[in-house]
Image (cartoon, rainbow, N blue to C red):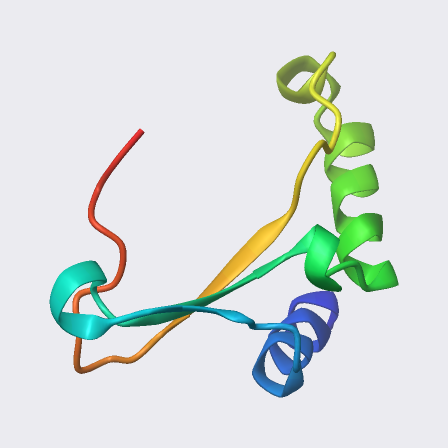
Length: 81
């Protein structure tokens, strides 16, 4: 149920301000926590991941949050990091 809420939030969100042109960058839009991507359910997800996966998440707190939407006709972000 929570994942459905997150998916719906992302589909309806109006905080995707960064645009990347398809031919050069792969065609996507981005949203970031400092541009308004800080819904309570996203912060709750981060908290619960930390709580439920203590061995993996130990010492790794949420520092930043971002999301991307892709046009399925383009490639999206290239593999990196």
